Image 1 (cartoon, rainbow, N blue to C red):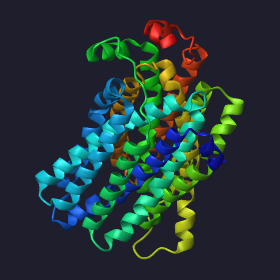
Image 2 (image 1 turned 90 degrees about the vertical axis):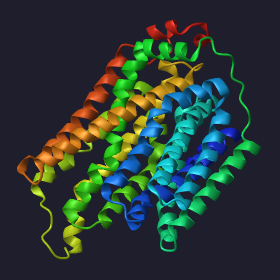
Image 3 (image 1 turned 30 degrees about the horizontal axis):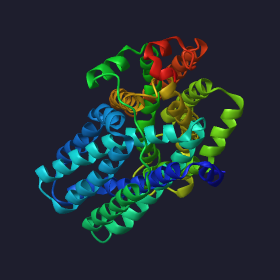
Length: 426
């Protein structure tokens, strides 16, 4: 089904999908091993956390700027510039060992992501026409595949030299940049009616978009737990660091195998708004197995635990991972379809950028709160509290999306759409 969906895409959309696979291969080939590389260089955990935090902040903080630039300069130049900048930034990771050099590489890596992430999604949105959810489903499958291949390739190269990882990643992004220059068609973008500040004021004044963004920020708040709470719990109950890899493998395989089928199934039965609402609720409900089992499962005693014990202890984590990934697969393509509807196709990049900026800030806050709850709960019987908090986040996000759907605010004829100007209705 994925191949059928891929063949239905336009040539430009196919390139964007392949491009996302390559971007994820290059990114996950290097970033997961950066901490180990810096440890080998003699840096402590605080400095490693600083570099990784700066990379994240530089990307999140510039999402709105990158999205606005794609509206005004065109998506194609921003995609090309972002990939070219990744060539430079990943090269710096391989060349520099000093803290200023690593910080510079981190800043440029984040800026590159802020340039091409909104631009890629805006271009694909325009290119997909009335099959946006299906196009983003295929897009997600290729992204998942890149997320799976990247770390495997990086681990193999790390056995030789981290600088080799940086070199191969640079080559991958250079090939992508060249392919986009040669193959990716230019898209016409009309003149903007307002200044940059005027465009931002339009976004801030769009109340239904702000409500939609607040509801959907639950998606990113929960998505971050794939890298925080689920790996921590897998390692805690199994006593093995290898169990962390199982979480990512299961999530990636489920995403690759089921994403397109889930999107098609939802399309036949539900509206886009209802799919988003159910998907968010599903992501929240996925933490129920851990809410029930976490207080009952202690960390294994010192010594090598038996594989039977490990497998049994990991069942709730892996069950949560499967249901969680299904919830993501339901939510994401339809959220991408709805964004230009509750926002504006004329300013799609700006709306995408603002959406990702707000969502990333909410995700950071949710992760901090859940982490603090985990520290307080510890190994006590109240260890279920963090999982309850995540369940509530998902249910609140789903309820918010359901309320917008019930009020008709996720339709093109929604009340705030008339405030967007004539250009929006064309």
